[in-house]
Length: 108
Image 1 (cartoon, one colour):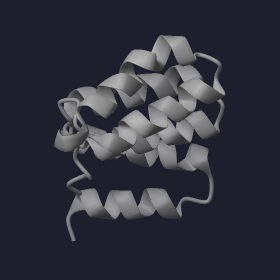
Image 2 (cartoon, rainbow, N blue to C red; image 1 turned 135 degrees about the vertical axis):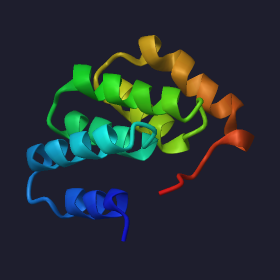
Image 3 (tube, rainbow, N blue to C red; image 1 turned 90 degrees about the vertical axis):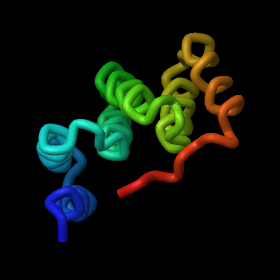
Image 4 (cartoon, rainbow, N blue to C red; image 1 turned 90 degrees about the horizontal axis):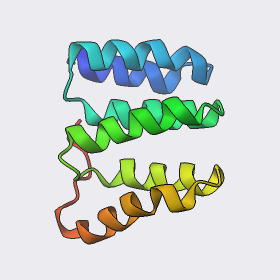
C-alpha cells in the first residue's frame, strides 16, 4: 500500500476532525498534487466552522486539479451557501457546471 493511501485511510479513521488535519497536511506535504486531500481538508475545516481555511484548501484543490475536480466545487458551493457568501462563490459554482464534461472523479 502506498504512503498516500495509508495516510488517506488514517484520516478517515481519525476520531476527530481536528485530528485528521495533521494527517492531511502530511499527505499534501509528501504529495503536493494530491488535490483530493486538499478537498478533504476543506471539508474538515468547514465542519470545524473555519470558513477561511476551508475556502483556501478547496481553492487549492481546484487549482491543483486544473479546475477539474468536481468534489472540490461541490464542497465549495456548500461552504458558500452555508456561510452566506453565495455571491462571492457564484463564479466557482458556475465554473464547475461549465466544465462538467471534463471533471475528475479523483485519482487516489
